[in-house]
Structure formats: C-alpha cells, structure tokens
Amino acid sequence: MENLVSHEAMVKEIKNLCWDNRYREGMTVEHLAEELDALAEDFDPYEYRDNLWDEDNYIDEIIYDLNDGRYISEYMEFLQMVAEEDEDNSIVAEILMQYLKKYKKGC
Image (cartoon, rainbow, N blue to C red):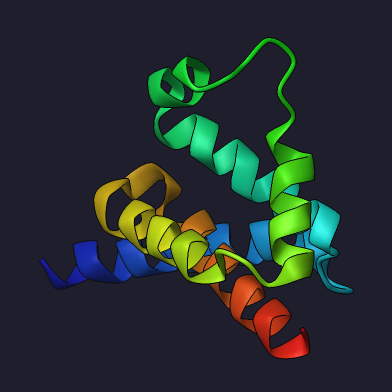
C-alpha cells in the first residue's frame, strides 16, 4: 500500500509541475479568468451550459470581478469544492487557489 501512496504522490507532483510551468512568469488576470472559466465548464458542463445566454462571455465577467476584488471568496469556495469533489480537476483547483491568493494579495 505504501508504494501506491508514493506513486499517487509522484503522479500528483508531476501533474502539478507540468501545469504550473505554463505560467512560470506569473498568471495575468486574463489567464486566471480563462482557467477559472474552463474549470467551471469542465467541473459541471451541464450547469455551465444551462446558465449561458446566447454568446455570454464569462471570462470578461470574471476579469471584472477579479479586478474589482469582488467575489474572490466565492471563487475560492468554488475551487475548494472542486479540489474536494473532483479528483481529475483537484490539482488544477489547488493551483488556481494559490494564484488567486497571490492575486488577492496584490490587489
């Protein structure tokens, strides 16, 4: 059983490094908004699509929210829920939480 845990930890770290290397120099608010939007769609595509109105662009709304400092705690709660409930997206959610915390400090 110990080998399995070690293997899972190694796989998680490799995924973490690969994903995080996409934004080595930092993540802009636009990238953060794009990643949050993509995660929301991936996490619950039916709910995501049910709430779209024609050509809605959630990315612009997320950028506005982040630049204004609004709803950051709600985004953090969403990311925490994804990290706890969705094994496939948990690593991405955890990384986005780190970036969101850094971004929040910078605001």
